[in-house]
Length: 285
Image (cartoon, rainbow, N blue to C red):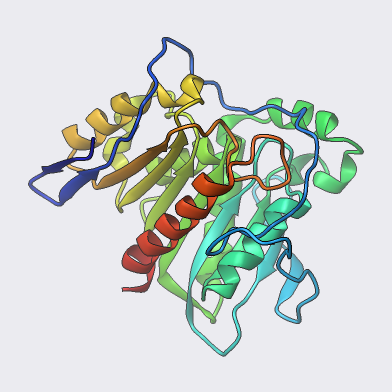
């Protein structure tokens, strides 16, 4: 059932629905064996038509990182801006067409959106012929290297004249969800963070460094990840952080990925609306 709690600094809002408990270890990754299905767009309800890939506001970009040029897919809303901005962190398959489509969806909602390719240090997603090869490469990335590249992505957006420098957030899915949370513990200027079924940081007390509100969205069947959400909520409360989360009954890991076998249309549609409402408050207001 939903629970509300208040802290000295800001209210801790927690919604926890149908948590399936099990003793498991939260690993930073997700399955690479899901067969493709249709590609609907879950906004406000899934439909068979994906967001158009061809757009004058969408472009492949590159910017300096500490060890390599960081590749990314940037999509800008119509108009001159400046706009709030979002960094989108991909699953453990890299910057796929699905993640590019998600990037376009957020741009259509009024955000400059940057789908960062965290395989850039090893040539970028296009250097790997299969998902399995991309997963293997991602598993070899160092945590600190990923954080450095995410900092570079933040710095790139902050320097853009069409971006509101104090309105930059991050969202991540699966492996990207864990890194979205990790980024929030490292980049103090980050305005907000959204975590889709990502694991907790290795040191849970690092959440003390989070500066802005956070949203977490999880599947009840994804017990490997979801069993540890109460620990995250307790740490956020301990350090007086604003954390809102929701767990979807019947939904598994990767329930938002509408190209995979675990896609859960009802949970994805609701999570999309919850995410937009949260970003409206934390980035646009």
